[in-house]
Length: 329
Image (tube, rainbow, N blue to C red):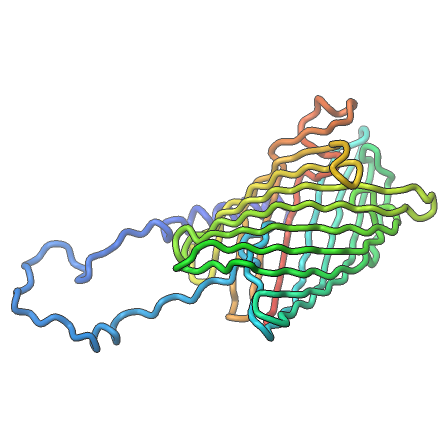
């Protein structure tokens, strides 16, 4: 299934489920009109109220709730999790006539544990697949290989709840990678992503807003040629999701991305704005899936040859699809 069809399917699901978020409050009797109750009727005792009242919902884990945007939750002491996380990146500017395609598939397998409350540590191994043909400034290639490892450390300074709706966390992600993400050339690269995360329960246990600000410098050297490599990326992402069915959450996600030549935001090469739906579902208390699509709706490249062309395709793709699967234990 293509990314566009995935996006359409998720948007149709959002439209069909939207009434669930807009339900009106009914009267306690479930009736409209009718004779008034007698003023002598006995009011329910406190014991009866306790028995008939519905239990309050538990706070929803926001860590994987938002698609490309990360939630602030970091778990409790002793919790463990295995995660499969993949991003498919599709579509760049063609170099000329004839068949042309750009497809990159990045996969991560991670193990996460929480040594203390609100602190999570995750070890990950990466793999990548590239298929490139007749793309501007890129060599044709088709291959798949191991792509390095990382360790993520996250601390949640503020935990959101129904009573206190704001959550805040910081995460650092040092990583060694063997393949340049755009060109697909062999390299030895070290990058360090720093991520500030905020989420807010707008409607307790019903509607959430998540926002991330990310800075990721990368330095290294290409194998073979020995040419140096330096780049940096700035990303601001925002998502709004609501519970549309039991344990199912859906909503839009908007991201602004800037890609630079140089490790400290030295020279802007591309910028892009992406929009798409994000879906999260819990199969059980311990098993979940997150699916998100991001389509580029605006962008610019700084290269004079492409400055007047639509979209920022030098550093970013037309389409991106993220799939995450997790099992907690």
